[in-house]
Image 1 (tube, helix red, strand yellow):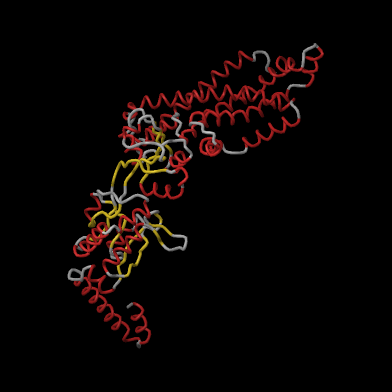
Image 2 (cartoon, each protein chain N blue to C red):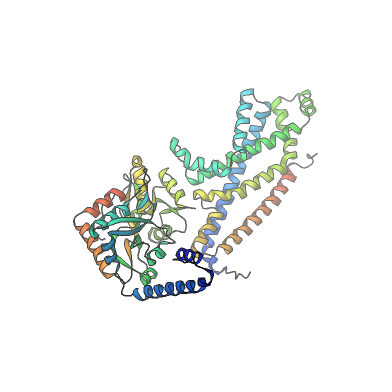
Length: 278
Length: 222
């Protein structure tokens, strides 16, 4: 619009310029006004997806195993497979939009994405967006070598447990561990993981995402998940007032849970079956 | 620039702080004792031992003095288990601190031995003392008297440097402060508290060791 206006101004004789520019401005305003007015009756996201045949899904690309860059520089992970699944259900082509923790809510609000993956439900977020049914487990868990029998918090007695100091991991395990458990606190998660992997601590507490990445890389010491501490499953985040799209997504999730395809994704990326409670 | 101090939360963590203090003092005392003895032995060998022993000691001193302490600590704690040597965090901290102090002590004591004029040991052997007797009763006391202040400084550096052992989860003073501020979020208060404790510890330790030094080496200092 701007370029057009400039062009016409250059081509017109001097006397006409102001009038033309004024007319251009008025037109712009009128169009803008129309657009604004059209917003409420604007077709909902599901119609737009159906019309364009494209669904824009916001995913992390630096958050393995949910979303990360594969060796062929294509994004891979739990969320990428989930996005494909949603695309199939909506009968639309998936356009992955790389988001960060900071910008993704704005991307959703600005309709740069139709939905976001890996969204944990919090009361604050509840006020601004809608959540689908949970589609992926996210929880903190105690990890330990296969040979060490630990089933619940009482079994932590007398064991050494590595955590990153001051994190949710630290607070959750400190709350439940018996007094005889030795909690070794490190400056950051890497310290805790190193201590566990080098055998300096018998157990560690990390998120299932980190746990899965470690299990995938160190099959030799056979770490496995012992029991989970704190759960906050991942949902698909959607704009409010998109009931039809939300329903479609919920149906897709329910279907994927029923036919076992979601369980397959969980096995593939998190190396554990989909929890029955999800 | 207005900050309201709130030390009221620290009370419940007294036990953590006291435990941290004990650990810091214990590690310092043990590594000082071991480091001083090994340093003297090392220095004696470095100035009078066979050629290959001198080479070995020189390599050790250079290796330790030219690498960061925290890296040495991580090597012992995270690295050695891969070779099958598993030391818990206390043993690893004690080993790393002793190894570190020994390297510096060897250099310091060796400099002291060098500063004792050859006439002293020559006079001792003229009086019929064996080489070992001459070293123990004539050279070493004079050497230690000369380098005592430098040695004392090194011990304090090791004590203050021991703050990094909190990185491998040794519950020392710094660990206590880190722990407290991760729980009550009063980081300024926590760190100001241990800063004061370290400062007081260092001052007391310096005074105490100076008194010891004066009585041990009275009349020997030139």
